[in-house]
Each structure stands twice: as C-alpha cells, then as structure tokens.
Length: 232
Image (cartoon, rainbow, N blue to C red):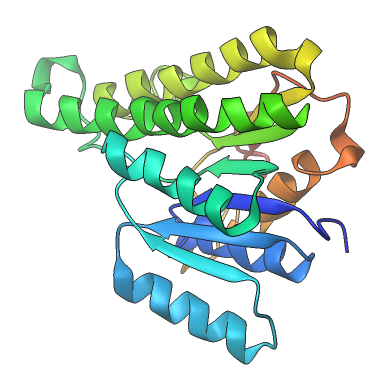
C-alpha cells in the first residue's frame, strides 16, 4: 500500500472528486480525516468505507471558508494521530459563469472565501506541524480556469488563480524544508455522464501520485486533468 502509515486530510470529501480521493487513499492504507460541509454525505461515505472492511476514516463536518472550521480539522488530525503528512485541499464552489459585466458581489465574496481562502487557512495551520516533522505534502485541487482566463465566470476564474498562486508560493518557500505543494487543474469533471472530461477517479489517481515518493521531485507544478481538452 502506497500510503501505509500516513495521515491525510481531505476536504470536500463527501462527493465527486473528494469522495474518490478519500476512497483511494483509504484503500492505499492512509488514516484519513475527511471534511465536508454536508453531514449526510460524510455518513454515507463512512458507511461505504466501513462496509468495504476499512476502519481508518475520521469524519469532520465543517466549512473551509470559516477559519475556525479550517483550523479545527487540523487540530482533530493532530489530536487523533499526532501528525499530518498529507493535505488535499479539494473543497470549493463554482459561480454563475458570468463575465465581469455581470459580476455579483455576494458571489464574488463566496468564491474568494471558499476557493483561495479556505485552502490558505488549512495550509497555514498545517505548515507548523509539517515543519516540525521535517516533511509534508500538499495537493490543491484548482481548475483549468486558473490557467485559461476565458473558461469560466470571472469570480471562479479569479479565485482559482488564487489557488494556483498559493500553490506556487508554498512550493517556493518550503521546498528546502521538506514540504512539497502541487495543484491538479481539472477541466469539467464528469460525475454522471460520459464525455471528454476527467473522471473523479482520474483526479484521485493523480492526487495519489503526488502524495507519494513517486513524485518526490515534483513541486510547484500545475497538472492538468483534462482528457485531451486542451488539445481540441
């Protein structure tokens, strides 16, 4: 198992990409702290994992856009396991796909609170324990919208650029201290229908690769999960 003995926090774990990452990380031996805004989704996930014969999941209901919730989940991980080896910042929200002329201030604020600020709160709290350990891995789930300006609404595009900037900043400042930080940038992720889009399981496998020593020299990278989208 590639993550045997590792402690991993995954946000937005109750559905879609986060659910796929959580199930794969548990399968690979990690002790997972799964955070999500929706209690029912976490309960369903926990039941499925337990039915599969695993007992390595801790669930935390919370909203990463609230600093207290973001800091609390790190404290839960440290209290339960005494370490935090891997953080996967997957939680986020999308906007109404409108350009700047239709900018909605309330939606803009929600985008910033959830998308760059949530991961920033999580990372700020996790970096201290990782520095004390002398190692740590952070995987941010951003978006191709953060790489291509015209692919989504202005609020979402700006907020995902923030996630990418956060990723590069952490990678630059902490590489010499044993901490790696990369981002996965999916296009639209197909959860119910087939098509030219990354599947949640595809993103999960990329997250697993980045969370292991197989990617020991990969740092500060933005990896697209796009199933040939950029080539069309």
